[in-house]
View 1 (cartoon, rainbow, N blue to C red):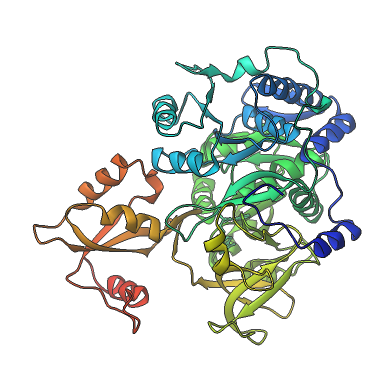
View 2 (cartoon, protein in one colour; view 1 turned 135 degrees about the vertical axis):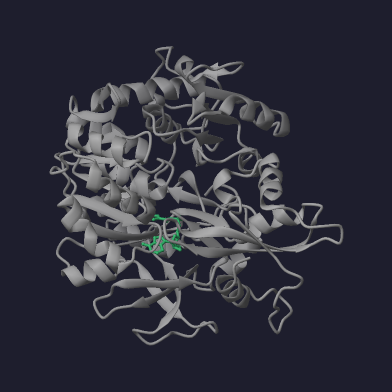
Length: 542
Ligand code: OOB
């Protein structure tokens, strides 16, 4: 196991292997098998570009050789921040083959997040696109390079500016990536890559996912979603989301010989046009996008009859909205409750309609263990609400390089404390009732209140800050900063936003409401009572 990672206990790992859950193949080997099985079928579609399985496999080998020629190999960390382009898929599989480890950053991340990720992971390289949605990543890369000396190389998809073009990596026709190198190839039990946690902490945590565990998750979720060669998956959400990458997502669909179509935006106009022209059968979105698409259905005339399943997850889907999906899109709704940490729950096509409308599904693996506990850690009777704890064959046992946090994020038996408040139904379904963790779910984006508080508190006009969610009809929740001003005057919302942006904080984390207070309600232990503060703010206008 890589330094800083926590593995499964050996006897548990043995059991998962004996049960045939972990098949002992790396993700890089998996692509080789898929390419042999599906040869000239189209694997990826991006605009006018179509890449067959055979081409994809060969492209991955060339990029792996190019990376290796630049000294990148086993256990090296590489921060990947790319939009939904074929290069994302190619790069990740190239790294999987080398045993080098992609760290999945979101396109929306800025200097604050990227600098931290590069530093924490001691990344040797950083990969970006030239520009995306009007943002130029090259100055960001220069800032990151200046801050983090471990970052030796920056590769750019598109116009490289002062950096190395991504294209240069595949220029040389080298030996196949799995021909071996001094450091050897990866083992299926090794960490394959890092996902980012939705985070309750001041800084995001890195989630190590192994080849075995991720291959299992994607294979099983593809089976449950009835993914086969005829599947055409539209990747709408960013590829670095676990939802898009592997639930079943890109990997699950490629594993079944299907086709992955990359969308560049989430809007109904673009996505409906792609669904029509590519005859998309499956896609996955967050409830906010589902809302926009429901509205779009009223005025955009497109043939969406190819759609079989619309997966919705990442934030609570209310039953009223759930009921509108099938009539509006003429396809089945699948609710998905998942987390980058592992556990994945989905509703099944065989579930009765009520279950599909009102639950967030049940676990994909018979080996997933779920416990619902009260604040004292005692089991709550079935039907009661409590915090969800879980462990299983694809749920992490520890965050990367985070022993202190791990001591509280997991219990003595290795169960991960999800921070979600749930209730289990008789049928084994999970209903999400709320959360105990200090996170704001804005659309599908997770914002750590603690992280935003840290930045807001640094403003000279802020004495103390508490960040809370406020309800929003479109996004579900928005970020609200409650501030006790310093003696010499209060900041405006605009000032705060500019201040946070200047600190390199990603846009989706910026407060959209500011509430000024002389004091905050406190709990018996003297901490800010956010429950009362939220109720206060919800009941007031400013
Ligand atoms: C997905 O993953 P993350 O890591 O961005 O966020 C996980 C958290 C969960 O702990 C829960 O609080 C919330 O997002 N969540 C939901 C939900 N699905 C996720 N809350 C209510 N209802 C749902 N259906 O968000 C994610 C990962 C894989 C698949 C789908 C979503």
